[in-house]
Every structure is written in structure tokens, then in C-alpha cells.
Image (cartoon, rainbow, N blue to C red; front, side, top):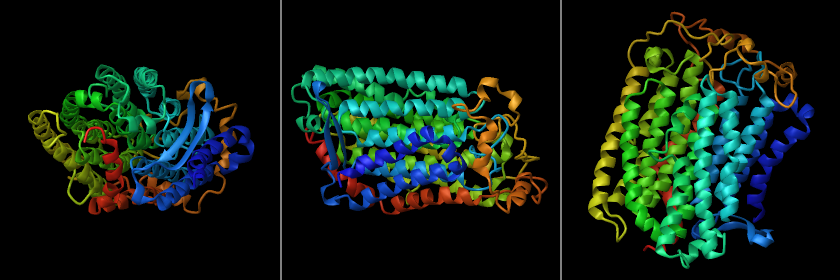
Length: 575
């Protein structure tokens, strides 16, 4: 089965390339093309999960190791273990659900970025961008060569930049520039750290470096390399105070961009700590761990306080990610099996829960034309009971209620801080535990405040935003429907496409389109308010996330039994 990682990468890559070489042939099928390609990738990920040897979870499986550049000793080395398998499955699932969200439903429904409209929606470019993004994300979790890891780590930056810059909201240009500057500068610093490791050890093989546990590198070199690599990973995580690009990126990104950014891209940073920084540089990790823990708990409290001050729903969820990623970093800082297991569990749980939250925030923004919590007027449980109920469920899951996936990662990270690894100052980590516990209380506070503003109370908002003519701030990314509002350069299509050339991709309007359009405009609603509750394509995109949040919350052993052997191997030099 060593072919499986290669095919898993090849499917979205070939899917993206076909869009370049056969645009005319594929244009009528764009609505389902991305769905099919990402669906095949998801099936391959499921096959990988099903055939994985769980008795050998610490050992790299499905390995492919081919010489890449012989003169430099570089290898095309791919494999999967208990740490990377859940993240690969999460990536494939979220990408597929994003295409479900984009491709199903009435073509004229708000938020469908593939629908034809004045100015050109550039659907071919969007499908291409998402498929290239999937290649980079999955490749990062498969790579076992330092340089190959770095290549995949950087591949994701370009499609995410365009996803924000082209399909984002009114402030998309500033947000995309801030995103690319922060992440590229962090990557440069990380590359210097990787090159330092290569210069001192003579190899880029992550497995060999992990088994060596820092042999051949003095303590001072390990500390320097850990700081350099850690800074690059911390920017992507993001860790306070390197987080300032994240709220703008999330606020301006389209719904699918926010889902993948929170659900997968942030995990690439934390994954790097588990895959490279801690096992390859154990002495550096032990020296920097107290500092990492300090930044983590500051991020937890800062993120919670920032959430309490937010009015925009998407921006609040973005700041909540800063706090949740703080728990992940605190777990890594403990350098214990319990703490790192908690960090890895929180990684997956955050991807599921926050992905669902951004889907919901996008759905609310599409219906009301804004994500401002005060402008929403409250009462969503009265006007849109199903949507309000799912939002309540996701918020409760994110604040860490027992029985849902958000609980276990935070609890294990705090428990790891109670008894950190030998050699770490226990009193200091007990302080971190207390501060982290306070952050958990504040997390409950800001989510409850959000629910009181958005879902409860009497509805006060007067009108829904018509689907046929959304305002400049409405829809996913808030793009205005008036083509004249855009510069000519942005209305010219993609790779020579004219706006009208995509109309054929949406032939065959559903029989219920007029009725759906009427519901979008508020016809049949109560008092002219929004009457369009959860739609079929939204239901299909959200239910898998809800099921997994419940499953991992009620049966955490599913993940913990997978990650524990790999974590014990990872900590071999520290135990």
C-alpha cells in the first residue's frame, strides 16, 4: 500500500492541472468537478484510515522513500503514523465538505461562490485554488524530509493568499497582504533553523533525526534551532504575539477559506512542533518549554478577553482560535505524554468545531448581510430555529463542555501542566495551569455572551438582505453584486475567461429555484424576516462535523489510542 500517499497527493494535483489544460471540456461540469475530485481524495483517506495498522501506530506506514536530488541528499519521503493520520483525514474531510457547501443547492443561493453573476465569479479559478491548497495541506502531513516538509508548508500560502485576495470581503487586500507577509517572514526564519539542523547533522530525514534525538548537536545549537523553527511554526499556529494576521484573514476570507484556514492551516504549525521541533531538538525543547508555556497561557487569556470585546461574529471566532491554540501549545510545552496527547487531541477537535463555527458564521452572514452581532438583532432561535440550535451546539462544544470533543484536549493539556516533564519548573507550570483554567472560564463567558446576543431574545432586525442584490458586505466574502463596483482588472475573469463563459456550468436550474429564491427574499417569513433555515447542502456539509464532535467527545479513546504510541516514541529522549 505504499502507493497510497502518492495517489492521495496526485488526485487533487491532477485535478487542478486538468483545469488548466482542458478548461473548455470541464467548464460545464465545474459544479460537480471539485466535489468529485475531493471526494476521491476523501475515499483514499478513508482507505488509509481503514488499512492503517493500529498496533504499530508509532511506526511510519505506507512509506515511500525515493531519491529526489542526489547531490544534496534530498529524498521524496512520505509516510503516515499515529500523529499525522488524524490530520490527513481531517484535511480530506474538510476540503470535501467545502466543495459540498459550494456545489450543492440552488445556483442562485447566496454564498455559492460558483454561481454566475455580474463581474464573473471565476469558478474555475476557485476550484483550482482549493485543489492546490489541498495538495499542500496533505503533503505537509505526509512529508518526512525536512526540505520536502518546507516545500509543502509553503505551497499552501499562495492559494490561501488568492482565496482571501480574490474572493474575500471589502478589506481583503490588506488582510491577504498581512497574511502573506507574516507567514513568509516566519517561513524564512524557520528555513534558517532547518538549514542549521542539516548543517550539523548532515541529513534531512525526519525519521533518522527523530531517532537520533539531537545527537551531534550541542545544547546551544539545539536551542538556537528550536527558537528559529519554533518562530516559523508559531506564526502559522498562531501564537501570541505573532497572531495579528489571523483576525483580519478570517474576517475577510470567504466561508470556505475560513473553514480551511482554521480547520487545517493552523494545525500545520502545531504539527511541526510534534513532528520536528520536539523530537529532533529535545534539549532545545526542554530549555524553551517554560517560555513556550508562558506565551501559550498569555494567548489563552488574551484571546478570551479579545473575544469579549468583539462585535463581528467571524472576528470573535478568529480570536477564539488564538485561545484554543494556546491550549495546544501549553500541552506541547509540558513535554509529557499526557500534555502532548492533549495538544494533538485539541488540534483535531478545534479543526472540527471551529470549522463548523465558520460554516455557521458564513451562513448567518449570507442571510442577514452582516456578521455584526448587534446588527443581527438576536432571536435567531425564534426565526431560524435549526440554524440557531446548531450554532448553540457548536458554541457549547467550543467552550469545552464534557461529552463533546472540545473538552478532552483542554483538560489533558491542563493536566499535563499539573505534572510537567522532569527538569521543568513544576511551580511555574502549576501557575500556567491556573491561568489556563481562568482562560477556560473566560472562554465560556464569551461564547455565552455571543449566544445571548445572537440566538436569544426577541428578533429586532427588520429585513433580510435579498439574494438577488446583496449589499457590499453581504454574502461570503461580502462581494457586491454590482459589477461596476469592481475595477476592470477584477472583472476580467481568469486566464482569459469572460464572465458569460461560466454560465454553462450552471445549466439545469432546480425545479424549486423560484421557491427557494422567494424564501431568500423573505417571502413567507414572519414579518418579512429571514425565513430560510438550514438548506440541504448546508445540512450535508455540517452533519459529519456534528457527528464527529459527538463521537470524539463520548469516545476519546478513538484518538488517544492512536496518538499515544507515537507520542511515547516522540518523547524517547526526554522520558
